[in-house]
Length: 558
Image (cartoon, rainbow, N blue to C red; front, side, top):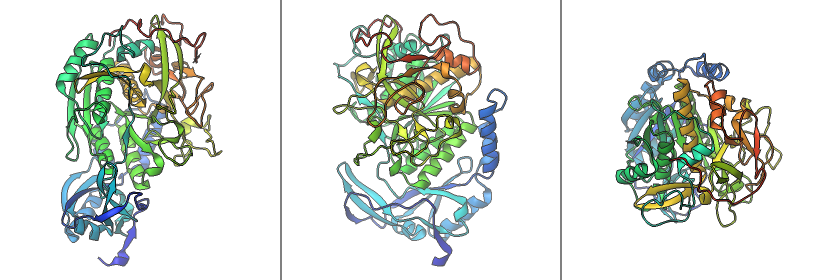
């Protein structure tokens, strides 16, 4: 095909990486890319999601079969990609109409020629990666059908948002002696609905590295549980499998934290762990694999990985948001950690930044607090900020995502005066020193970070969905209409932003009052014995004291 028939794919431009280029990518190396295609009926999907948000109890979610039929890729678009591959010496590895993706393989030389990209090897502190610069070129007549082409780059796209507390010797210490909480104690403090286990639900966890050992999980749940442990399954994506590193201060810490928090709070739910490569391609493919999974059928999703939205290509953001739309359509609510590096989000320019995917308007962003408790009740809860020597909750205002409908009344404003999607939406305990007891790689420790908040909230929604017998997706409009379901966090800051009454860019709407949220979403909640969150919005910032009283007497099993 003549060169003039090609155009730059919108949103695919990449600047040169900051690390030095050491060589051209090996011409004969075989690589894989995923071509993401448009929805055959995007306008109808937008209308359906809007109706779900307005009448959640009356509007039905689509089954996965219905979604594939109504919103899968157009056969003509798939055929056009097949022809393009044949014309350029590329192989069609897999076609997933329901995910709207076509996987292609070919040598670096063939891929570079087909898509007009130059790929080089670059040296970073952690190793060598492959990267491209410039824009992806696609046939002009095919360009309207293509959302993204991902896979040329192998540079890591995200970081796990967890923080280790003080390590202990192998084996969990009793809760009475430990520095942190069991997940079940946190659930009790936040008044999660009783009488539910998450039965009939499946919590999808997205992981971009690391792994878990079955023996560790068995030991953990036997010690902090009180019921049978959850069923945990590992699902490989793009060749990445459950591969424990053997050191908890690695991606293993993230994987273990997610599984043990979600599984301890909702032991009746299945936990499906989707392992994908830490690349744009791997991240999006893992989410799509969970959304389309007919075997495990996730009903809620937790993502504890992310990075500043500035580092993403527009095409990858578009592909990710398309995946999140698909999730909502089939009844999956997605939670994502807001980050552990304060308002700067690890960008070393002195400016405020927010983390993606938490900054997506289709995802519930999860911020972090520091909790003190005594006698089974929270005595103080403030913004988590251990800076400069530790972490701090992410949060702020997006430079990319405009103000969504559910935040119009708030109209979040950044420190520079611009308006955009405010992050986070909700919060929960994230301070490593008041964090969660976990066990992994034979080591017991206390772990925090906003990584813990996403699976905590996912487990809460699994309990609620079991109780009310339906999905609550899309959840965000309902959250912003349920002020009594939160305890406002009014003290502390994450750097550029400070907490205060109402929504704020540190802890969002606040920490959960689980029984009140159940009632707000259509369930029946028994009168709470606690004085916190009983039918009226409360402010929590050391309400009467800011005691550092013992966190030992919560009295609930994990």
